[in-house]
Amino acid sequence: MLWFGDKKSNKLDITWEYATHGNLWRLVPSNNGHFVIEDRDVEKKNVSFTCLDRVTGKIIWEHVQFSEKWWVTIDVVHNNMLFLHEYASPDLPESKKIIAVDIFTGKLVWSNDDMKFLFVHGDCIYAAKDEYDQRKFFQLSLLDGVVLREIDDQYLSVIQETCKGVVENTLVFPVSINEGDNEQMPASVVQKATADASNVSLIEHVSHGNTDVVGYYESTSEALTQQKYCQHITVLNRENNKILFRDIVNEHVAVTVPETFFLIDSFLYYIKKTSTLRALDLIRG
Image (cartoon, rainbow, N blue to C red; front, side, top):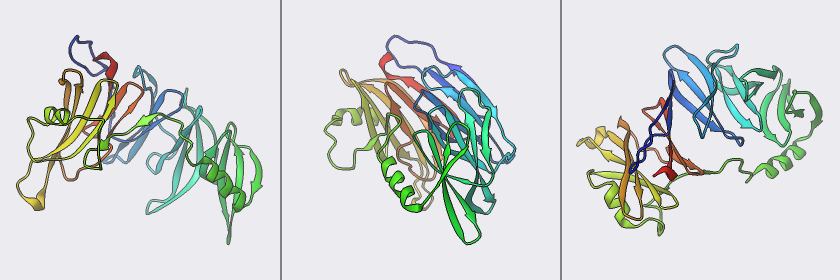
């Protein structure tokens, strides 16, 4: 379900949000401006996939399923393709099959039942096939899955090293203010963001221009053995230290988890209560 916010003159409002049917299990950005969502209903053992435009929130396609309805998950989004894999058995994490999906339509482009996905580089998929007592490696065409050639493990390692450090998205994650010096964030920003909270822990910060985003957890339990936290997110204007936006992301959580929000360009993204993706355009504040 998609929802769009209204503009406000002095405050930031939610630009758009999307609510899944089950848990928003994975959120994978593409390098062409999309998000692919893995929507997993744990009770019904049912998983579906949805693609959104990450700036407008427009639904490109929604609730797409394949032959396997539960034991399937995302490998990667690369160029115009989404790659999925199934599992060899429910009690083993070993992957099997390669499923290639067109990111613009959500339709199956090709699949390979005999190999398993290793990684993608350029216009090629690198895959493995287990045969008796040996494992073979292959280079496949990204577009149609055609086997281009068999390769050895040394060549595979060279390609893997080439892939390291290649970043296809401009994700910016927050930094804990407890980790060394953080000269980019004045102490007044933290004080303003957490002014109404007590027993605060795991304070994180990320900024865009004159806008600061502060996330933090507030302990809501007096018993040390049964700690529960409330997770907050606050957006402030650095020039006047004015709060532009506040939200409670999660309540009654058992542990503090870092990097649960991030920026892409001027947009802040976070998941509220495990099932709603929210987007705020920071330049509108």
